[in-house]
Length: 478
Ligand code: PHE
Image (cartoon, rainbow, N blue to C red; front, side, top):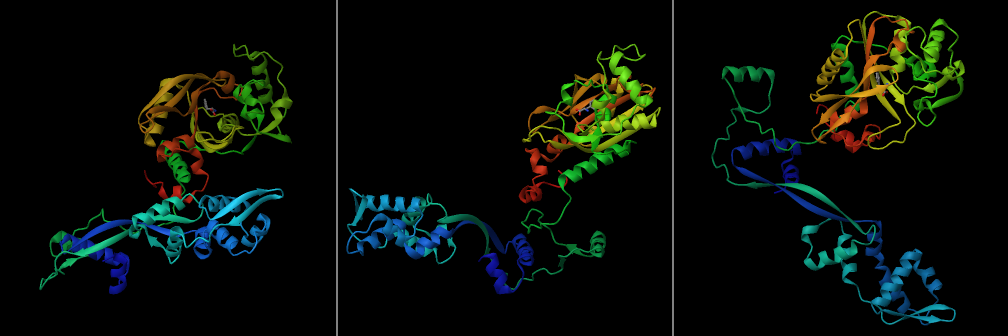
């Protein structure tokens, strides 16, 4: 007997009954079989055909009722078919030998040969129109007809449906259905069970249970929270800043020359006519000198004329390094562990591994004894804290760090290394004009890529497309 039927007859709810059945199954009184059925339901077109007949049959029947052959236009004025359907019907009716089509001077003329009887597929559609039908109950002939009809759009749809069949194995005659076992757990019961004064029934934790669609934290929000918690636990403090930044903080203060490709409009979103309030301050003058001739640092600089106007242009920040360098310049700390987490923007097209708006995690450690080895240690600790065990570093280049390293983590699922972003030790051309005497280790990673690895996602856009089916499936704690 089916579970739903059983529930109706016994006046119990299905979930309650499932538990009872599991219990009876454990006692070997019943057996349970889960069956999958394919249910066929007519679509809009299918219902119309079930009522009126196949287009080709309707056409032939109408024609046979006419005393003299009408023009094709007159014919369809009565049939009211879409032009494509009408033409297909004309072809099929002729193919079946129900009508003849001849070319006349003024166009095509259709004449009746016979009025077709009810067609087997019409009979099948009429049968299906009585309600959702189990595909398993159809005869082989009907299944063949159905396969032929499946090429016509919106005739019918198929859906898998699972049903639970419960079979009685043995009537528990005169048996004492052991009611001394408790089924609903309470804290008190657990204590009693521990002392041996009650017996608890066994639970089959693999038995099916209803799916509860509860509200939950968005996976990206979960991941950002984990990143924050990991860095806070490592003794970092969080700093924040605006999404719109001057070119000065985004590029110039980071020793990125004014003709660097990253500053071009193809890569960076500029805000038209929004001039930022970068003035002719001592800091700005030092940065200008560093760019032009290296100031007094023994550096050669970039050898060009630095422009304040260029530095005043406002951009959507392209990296969170703009936030950390600004923090350094405004706080000139001798030691600090600081991170910044937030959106950055890049003028590129979105695909499964790129977004034009994504989250970055940026960290800096200000420390006299900063070194590449120490930086790798911090990064390993941070990534291990998030559950990424296997990482490696490659040499890289950024205008603001020397040396520069590119960390990658290994994805078991993809079987390859994935680059995370950049890191390095800030150059003196960055720290000294900002008034920082200690060395500064810095890194910046895109977080959606890490989140993809974390949640086993294959498309970065899933995090932002609000596709409920994916959001429901993705585990909260993978
Ligand atoms: N800002 C770099 C990026 O967005 C990453 C980086 C940060 C590199 C800090 C070095 C130091 O790709």
